[in-house]
Length: 116
Length: 114
Image 1 (cartoon, rainbow over the protein chains, first blue to last red):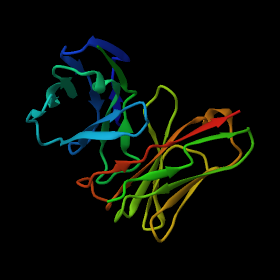
Image 2: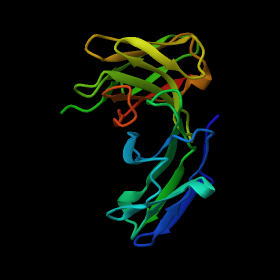
Image 3: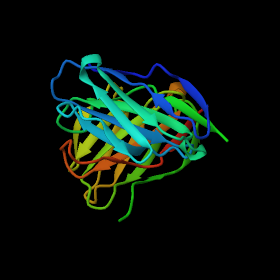
């Protein structure tokens, strides 16, 4: 069975600091997808990135970057020069199935607080 | 393009009652999934509907049931409410049963069971 671990329950940083959110996953499949979602206080989950298991290239999108390492089963998320608007709960998720559904598993989330 | 909407926003029920939550999918989407998010936890998959048929179910008892309508809107019904059913219920819609398509989440319904 698949599992997603986010060991950091809560992180607090001061604005403009860089912060890395850790994600470790477990799966027996060789084909899978990894995701990051942001959940602001409003409650709606906002998609940030999807990465398949065959693409280990790191990705950068503005202040966001992701480091995927199959050797350590990790998919870490870094926010550079954090801003107050980045304050939210961030979820890492894993999907083994060929479609969204029962094999779509979320981690417990990391609450990020960015202080002015 | 209309996003995913859910109603009501908040709901308070008492133990033993029944509740119906509603979800309107994003325009053009034919697949909807429902998730339960307890306080301080990640969302957990309840079930998914594709073209009005249930297509996969998580580890939830039969008192959690659902429907998807021809216009692809959906309902989540919970019978015999228990205190542990208190949670944020999220629905997510996607275009088809393929992973390459994105699923979009609604804002959720917060259910409190007293």
